[in-house]
Length: 489
Image 1 (cartoon, rainbow, N blue to C red):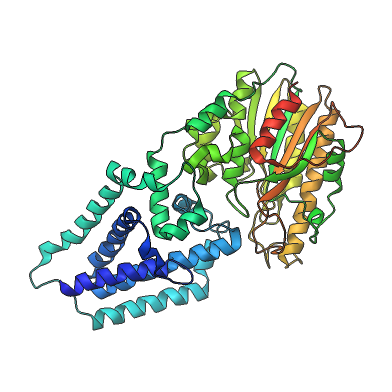
Image 2: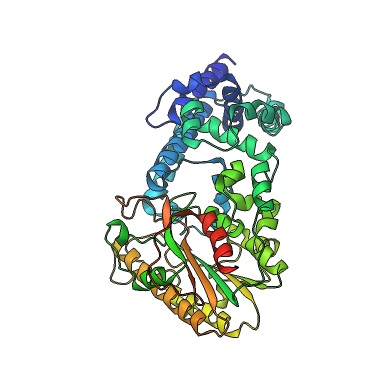
């Protein structure tokens, strides 16, 4: 038992150090409340590892390796996406299993990864041969003790006591970098999870914003098309190598508004920008729900543009040419006010450009929806052509990621031009609002400035500007509110 206690204590200190990159022991100076929660997390991991082997030093090693992998993974994620690992990332694991390409998880099946797994299995077998089990002879009834410890620690983490312990350490909304510097990665994830699961929703700030939302007015255009264009960023306007996007520039010159679209993340987390636009709620007002608002979107459904359009007598539709289950959109679409969901099954294999349905096919589908609309229609479109990963094998004869991205951006540009023409040809006219959900990850164009912003344009076929409209930079939720304001007056 002495060896078990020493292994547990040392692995706790080492895991706190290893979850930071470079490793450091400063996390041991975190507030006692944060360390208690982190200790409970350590108990869960250590006891789970120990229950499989009854070897204390092997359990200590496994726990430290887990801490190191989380720290290294968080550091890698921060280098690529500008954000460390957060508690809500666990909800994305099932998506990574179902869609490994989107999350680079397919690399785990490559020979190098398989060789690492094999080496770990051999090393584990060797370790078991060196370190004897401390399970006493005839002590098989004791095997239930470590799983029981795991269960009790999990219950403690899920208790109201743990939430009350955590909440005084945090503000109304997360300060991710500051809190990781103060508490460490593991404790910050535990603290944020506690705040997320215990805070009331909607928050007071979100409730106020929902009450102040502008109603859909009677002077609306015949059709409103809002497009969340995957990774759409006018990189050429920022001094980087990229296509000129003539259709986008034409719409900016003719449009009601255009500019940079500030989003809650860079390189990923489509759901954050999507939720911000669909609800018009500022990110700050969501508190800890902002990490993945789709996990709790029914609590904010009354703010959805689709709900508000439908209440005003409009038909509403969501178009996303991919798996309808992604982000549970198949369940959320009706809750958020959409009458119809046009998903990937509505498109043919020949509609693909690269690994995903192309923007040309989306332009065809949107134009068809505009042409056959027999009354007011709100159509929200989420494209996917520009989604990663990038590199050899994506496009025939084009292996450089930046070149692939430029081709896809040019396709997005043609798409918006075609949809604008379809709206212009409709007798009742229409509005087009297009924005990017985020800039590309830092694996592409690493020197690109202002990476927490994409680009947007708001254009109305009924009100073509006589002169170029000055650039107006907005948060993505403000773009949504501006669309309602400018097109319904």
